[in-house]
Amino acid sequence: MTRFFKIGQALMVAVALVATAGTQGVAQGQLAPAITVDDRVITQYELNQRARLLQVFRTPGDVTEAAREALINDRLKEKEMARFGVELSDSALQQELEAFAGRANMTLPEFTRMLNQNAVDISALEDFVRIGVLWRNFIRGRFGREVRISDTDVERALARQGASPTQLEVLLNEIIIAAPPDRAARAAQVAAQIARLRTFAEFEDAARQVSALPSRENGGRLDWLPVDNYPPQLRQLLLDLETGEITEPIEIPNGIALFQKRGQREARRPVQAPVSIDYAAYYIPGGQTDEGRTLATEVRDQVDTCDDLYGVARNQPQEVLDRQTLAPSEISQDIALELARLDPGEISTNLTRNNGQTLVFLMLCARNNVDTGTTNREAIRGQIRSRRLAALADALLEDLRASAIIRP
Image 1 (cartoon, rainbow, N blue to C red):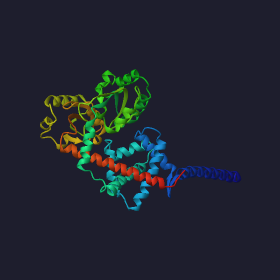
Image 2: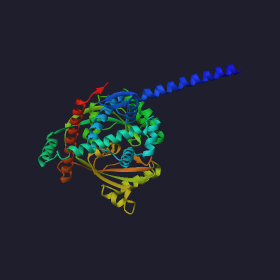
Image 3: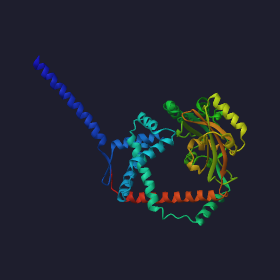
């Protein structure tokens, strides 16, 4: 018995050693260099994590290739910034992470849990945010003094914006699926199925079943709208669609948007593209409950212009009314999509905040065009500055890449 017991022990030890060696092999494979950029290493684990992060961000195209290119660029940026001693403190990084999560209408712990559910470690987001913030600040510091925007530059931009007598308009079907945190996974599955549809009838039927917008009643059909009404980050995507084609799911706070293109045309331009948009958001408790909608109807009956909302909000906490004048690129995507459908003085009550507990009474005050005064000129000056800094950053990155040794 003793002999057999010793043999059994030996077999158990051997099996354990093989299992341990296998686990170590997997771990070593994940941590092995997948790419080297000069003397800096990118591991397979980093590649996998960045690809998963890009999937969470609904990045279109091949996320594996996008992750590879982004991480190579990150190593080049890190090496260049190290020459100048550029760093980001832990407290500053924490603030940036919280702000990043806030743009998705989530707290950082909520955003971290969502990442964990998608097998993404928080360190992947930390690297993504840290390098992005450092590079943006580095470019401003390095090239800021070189970028001088003259009045002539502004006048030239104004002339270009006002030169075209026509504008592109798009005819779309829309679906926005409500996706609060507790239903986000199911909403993503439904959105992925809709993105694979092929006909107008199928998309319109899906809109009637799942869309959270009033347009669901007519299959999500929208009228012709200038493509400039849509958020800047969506315009080229919409223009690139073929007739009948559907976008990939687009994440917005507490929701997922999809669009199907029915047509595109060139139309007479009544006004120039807006340089800034003036809008007001009045926050009503109750969300999309009967009580919340009743309060929204009462407010609608009291206001004709955005200025009237100040009277409605009088004697209430200051945060219940948010009046903003922002460049289109600075507006939250879900709000921008709602504003795209409105004329000045019109109202939307489709959005919520606070996990659906607060209804957003959204009103478009004005679309400010190039001839409306000093504010717009300063906005144009800022846009020119941003474009020139971006061009300088791209050129620097190309130079860094050209002189680097990248394997494989």
